[in-house]
Image 1 (cartoon, helix red, strand yellow):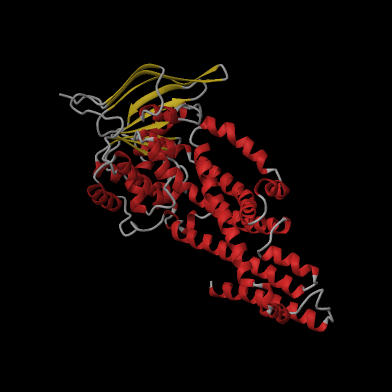
Image 2 (tube, chains in turn orange, blue; image 1 turned 30 degrees about the vertical axis):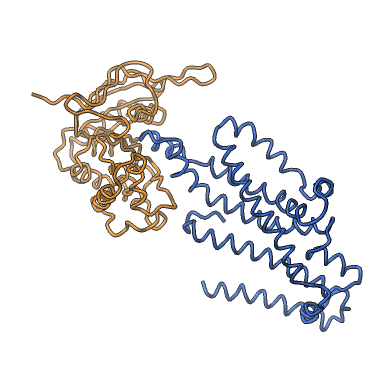
Length: 255
Length: 249
């Protein structure tokens, strides 16, 4: 018996109305995400990928189609089961790293002693042991983003939504964070939806890639990446990696 | 760091030295500019009752300032609680801020007679605006994505306020408090110039008549020191509650 999808989108639409004009941000997004998958949403600016992420986060309602997250066997609580990571780490400057990680637990009113313990474990998982009592400004950009990932995991959500989390990092740090994310994903066992405009990043990370195009916004493709795991950087030179990348470039009209 | 403090202290000493040398060798009459020594000697004149002057002016400054802090922060909290309140009140406040508060002095005296109350109100009226406006700005400066983060966890308005808005606004509140501290001193002294029967500003008007310039110098120095004390307290409090990186210059 194959497991049920964790997220099921069927013809999801999102329309923005500004000054009487309708602007289609998402049209007909249709794809499934299996539990424990890491799905890359890739596309240019204005393709609606961030909007789709906000719809998944429950921040915006969708205007058409069906969206279902969770299943009878694997229920989903929209207030507790979402962790978010953004392009900026958005750590609170006046809180130490550990206290920053605890923020979602505080908002949800979880028992703090246990959350504190978990926050320490997560900081170890993201490689920030020994930095718990530092202030954000004492960390590098990459380290701040690691702390932001720990914060997204502290309330043990089933779904982690990442909006170009490594977009502001330099190229080398970004490669390193990609490997780190794969390791964290494997250990934490979460379902992750990862928004990026980096084609190679999308292929390298994803179990599946969903390609969105802009003007008009629509879903152009959805395919499984069958590269072996664990992924290593030298896979980027494999022929199959190039095949996947070219497939996306072509869809985005760059070839 | 130590070298920086030393250099700063040195600049102060250098100014006093230049002042001394200028008076000593420039053949400047005492009623135009007294020497540092003559200025200090003014403190010995018992008729001037310096302690009472310091107490009166200090009380006016601190009372007016404290009132400005409480009212300024409270109004900012009220105005920024909802977008509509903010849109309604903020432009009005910006306009009211354009009033030169010193020009209100004669009115305040008409309304409240003369004495420590109107002088405190002068200090209040001039210090309240920077505190109110910076606090309001700090409260409304919130990263939209941080708002998303809280909303994705279905956090309440109150949680957003206590965990993110208010601590995020603290550096702004302090930058307004620092500006307000300097202005409060000016407000109280202007009040004393306009109408009063005690305080350092009042004393300055008295000794001006007798051309006792050393005493006027001393009064200015003491008023400045009152300002320094208030400013120092604000700075010390800021160091206690706002971590280094979060401070606004």
